[in-house]
Every structure is written in C-alpha cells, then in structure tokens.
Image (cartoon, rainbow, N blue to C red; front, side, top):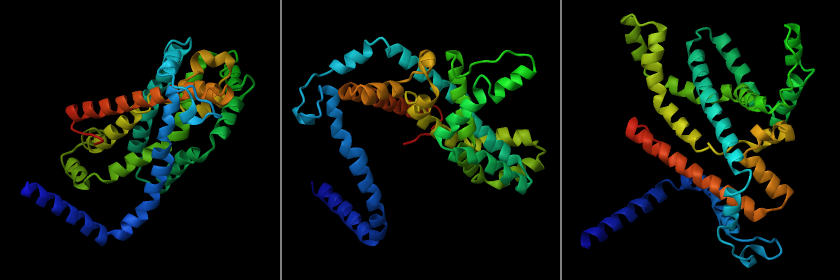
Length: 311
C-alpha cells in the first residue's frame, strides 16, 4: 500500500511540476480543449433523441422513450440496402482510385528536378482544393451537360451525346473523378512531407550501387512513406459510410437516386425536409458506431500485419 501511495504521490508531483513549468503551453491549448468540450463532447447528450420520439415542444427529456424503434424502421426500410450499397461503392471507388492518386502524384513530384516546373505543377494541383464545392458542381454541369464541352468533343469524334448527370450509371464516375481532380494535389502534401523525412544517404548509397530511379522509388521511397500510407488508410477506413452530402445534393436528381442516394443525403431529406429528428439521429448514431468499428478493426489488423498503427 505504501508503495502504491508513494507512486501516486510521485505521479501527482510530476504532473504539478509539469503544469508549473509549461503553464503557458497549457494556457495556449485551453481554447482548443474548450472548443472540443463545448462543440464536440457537450452535444453528445443529444444522442438520446435516437431512442426517443423527439418533439421540440417537449424537449429531449420530456419526449417519450421508444427504445430501438427508429433503428428498426431504418434497418427494415425499403431504402436501407440501396443506401448502404451506394455509400460503400462510392467510398470503395474513392479508396481504389483517389487514395493512391495522391501517393502517385507525390512520387512524381519528388522525381522532378527542375524546381520552377515542380513549383508550377504543385501550385496547379493545389488550386482546385480551394474551389468551393458549389463552383465545382457548376463546372461539372457546364462540362457534362448534353451540350457541354465533353459532349461536344465526343460529337467531334463521332459519338452520341451522353447525359452524364441524368444517367444513374455515370454518377459514381462523375463524383469520384471530380473528387480526385479537386483533392489529389492537397492530399499529396502529407506524402511529400513524409518523403522529405527519408534519409538522403539511402539514395546516395543506392546510386553508388547502380540502382535506377524506379528501384529507388520501390525500395526506398515507398517503404519510407509506408507508415504514413498506413495511417492515412486507417483514417480513410473510418469514413467508409460517410460521403459528403453537399456535393451529392448538388449533383444528383431523382433520375440518379438509384446510384447516387447515400446515407448522408437520406439523413438530409428525413431530418431537414421532413423534420424526423429522432429517426435521423438513429441513422447518424448507426453510422458513427460502424465507422468506429471499422477504424478500430483497421488499426488492429495493421498493428498485427505491419506494426504500423494509429494508436
């Protein structure tokens, strides 16, 4: 008992000493902590409405308890499997094409030796990230409409015009490809930073041994940034049931619901347009729980396979 109490005392002394020594740093962190407590942890009590038949007039505590009624309605609803399928497919396509695109761009930029050209390419690739989603959606309509630029080019080579934004089969391609264009440059920054941390003597030794650029990429650069790739992959796994509703809402229409309607847009229609607050809270809670399970599972698998982990 004495040993435990002395250990607790020593820990307490260490904490107090650290607080006295670094009080300015803790003071600077206080606004961030307050932000997360107020805007992220504080509203969590609102999750209770997922288990209640919430009425704004009665409030959270006054609304009647209904248990898992809203979850049951969602799971047995006619749109459940369509929403899950569309959300997963868009995220899988994004993981297959968009995720490696940022890595490939970072590798290519790292191989550019002419600094002026490298900076030009970086600037051009970063700029789309700062364009509003509304503007991007407008550009998609201009380019992909029946009389847009893409269809004009198709007509010049003898193809019939395609209603890209009115045919359900094209929606996922349009969504993912526009996302790659907008985010590939910004996404490559973290990989460029990881490449910059690789020991340059490894490249010098490889050159002495006669290794080509391809061999240097595959045997030095990619292994060097693998921990970063794994961490980003784990974080992406946590978003497998999340698709940005703003962009989908701007691009989709009733003709493309079959492939474009995702969980987030369904939540928008039910929550904002139909005011089904408890139902949408239940859907959101289900989404969050599945995302947590996915990210924890991905982290555990990564820890066992490669020893790279998020925590």
